[in-house]
Image (cartoon, rainbow, N blue to C red):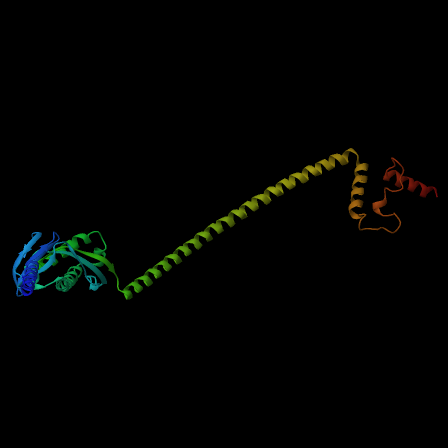
Length: 305
C-alpha cells in the first residue's frame, strides 16, 4: 500500500474515533442531563448510563440530582414589636425540571441569586408579623415550615423544589446588643444594691438583737454575781463572827498581824522608829499575856508610882 493511502486511512480512523467520542456521553446516578442543539433544548435525560447524541451539533449540560445547599447572606429584619434582628438563614433545594431550570436561571449561580431575593423577602414578611420573643421559642419550627412553603411556591417557577429553609443564626444588631448589655448591667447593679441593702438591714437587726441579748445576759450575770457575792460576804461575816466569838483575843491578834503584813510589806517598806504604834501593841508581851492584862499591869505600875 502506498504512503498517501496509509496517511488517508489514518486520518479517516482518527476522524471516526473523534466522531464516536463526540457522539456518546455518560450520565451518573447523581446527575441529570439536558441535550442542546445549537443552544436549543432537545431532550432531558434522567436515566443514568451511556447515551448518544449528534456529534458536533449537540452538546450536553449536566445538572446535579442531589439536594443542594444555599447559604443566604445575613440580613437585618424588623419584627412586629419594632426590634431589629440579624438573620442568617440557609436553604436546601433539588433541581426537578432541568429544562425549566436552564431556561430561567441557566445554572446554580443564577438560581442562588434568585433564591437570595426570595428568601430575604419571605423572611421579612414572616418575621415582620411576629414579636421577637416568639422567634426565640420552640414555635419557631412552625414558622420556618411556613417560610419554606412560601419560598418553594415561588422557586418552582425555576424548576427546583425547596426542601427546607432554616435560620442558622439569629443575632441582634451591634448597637442593640450594646444597649441590651448596658440595660442588663444596670438591672444587675440595681439587684445587687437591693440585695446589699437587705443584707445590711438584716445585719443591723441581728446586731441589735445580739446587743440586746448581750446587755440582758450581762445584767443577769451581774445580778447573779452580786447575789453570790453578798451571800459569800454574809457567810464570811458569819464565819468571822463565829471565830471571833470563840477566842476574841486571838482573833484580834490574828487580824492585827494580817494588817501589819499588808501595811508594812518587807519588800518595799523599812520602819524606823520606836515600836509604840497600834501595830506593835502585841510586841513585848509575855506568853499568854493579853493586851488587856498588859494594859492593866501598866495602870497598876502607874498607880504604885
